[in-house]
Amino acid sequence: MIREIQYNEIFDAQEHFRLILDSMSRPGKINKIYNENISTPEGLNNASALIGFALLNRDVGFYSNKNKTQIEEYFVVNTNSKPVAANKADFIFINGNEESEVIDEANEGLLEYPEKSATIIIDVEEIYDSAKDQSHELILKGPGVMTEKRCYIRNIKTRILEQIKEKNSEFPLGIDIILTDKQGNVICIPRSNQLTWN
Amino acid sequence: MIENIKFNSSYNFAFIDETTKKEIRRKLLKAICIPGYQVPYSSPEMPIARGWGTGGLHLTLALIGKTDTLKMIDQGSDASVNACNLRDFVQLTTNCKTTYDTNEATLIQTRHRITEEKLTDKQIMVFQVPQPEPLRRVERYEYKTRQMHAESDYAKMWLTLYEAFVKWGDVMHGAGYPVMVNGRYIMSPSPIPRWDVPNLNMADCIYLFGAGREKRLYAVPPHTRVEPLEFEDVKFHIENFKDVKCESTGYNIAYMDEMYQDDGITKKFYINDSNFLDKMIEKIAVNQHSNKYINQLKKNEQ
Image (cartoon, rainbow over the protein chains, first blue to last red):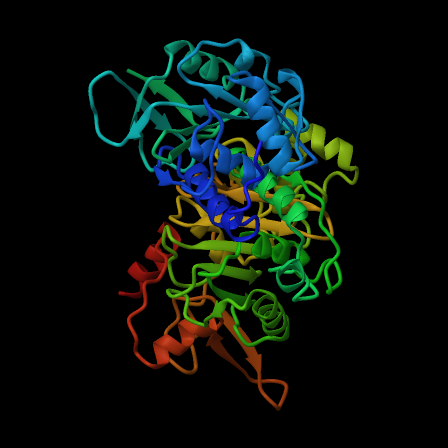
């Protein structure tokens, strides 16, 4: 697996972090994170890889269930982070296209330390801000959203949305979600927000 | 090549090493997801003493990039010692643009004031916090306050406010008035005057808080409910400057500084926010915060 030498771990990481922070503060806001100079392994969106680069290091563990060996090796080589079991992982990379039990297992923190929970990065086909065919309409309400925010996702399993809602039903316990698509569009769903969909 | 790039400077861009920045960044994201909850973080060693703005500095340095414009204020002033030194430090280690103009800044680090002018969704405000735990005055042990936050058990806090009212006829918190964030966590807004507290509510910008000595950071995302603690019959109120006027501008709907004159007896008042004062003097249009308390004052004025 190649080491991404085109990636600047000071300035690229900073720029991408600010975009993630912006998206996380304003749930449903689409930001673009993309770097054409990196070659991600099969099954990992460019933006998901960049989010990993910006946030992972030796202090945290990650879990990936798609194309497992390649993605694990990719992150280990580029970030020094360690692959761990799903219930211990700080970051979990999954595919929105496949139902998986990983979300149920994910760490949701403790009442005294709710920040010890997992962040889940979900790869989907496309994210947009106006309705299109075959898309799920997500409706977000809560901190960061003025009244309500609508965004549209293609190719995400309804079961995953149900799992997220279930997991986040007992605030402040819960998981925080980052959705990425193939073009580098990113939206976030922090646990503080109420999620409904059509 | 390695020599040229890596060892050209004796410190990293923005001083803190990348590993620690990543840790602070991860914690910042969690803080945003749980508004008002204090996230423990590493609080690395800085070239200034803990408790002199290191918390704010950690956040600023973890956030700042090449394209940012930084404004640094201390008690509303761009020119006080703490602000000047911290600004110089950040400028030296990042080579970023700095400004006094509130509207021009993308990143504002502040000690104990929110700017008088309204901030936009492109701006981030970072607070230096001396004591992040609002419950510390009623409970001295950290493990107990943590439990109280976990269970949302704020009876002691309410009781203290009630006792203050019984004893002195008012809730006596002048600065750092406790607030409820998103209906869940009680948070200390850092020692900002009461004047600024309503401006945290439903803002457009992101408010981030860093307490270096206490190793805690927390956040208020945009459009988040932030309510000062008050009773049904005893309401929160802000400072009232209705009998005084700013000596330079004649304006009095802004937070004021009280300046004793050389005789030690007479005093004059000036607008505290230095950039706001400059703009008022030069008659540049200002976009002041509006909230129900300030609106009421403006109404009374007419």
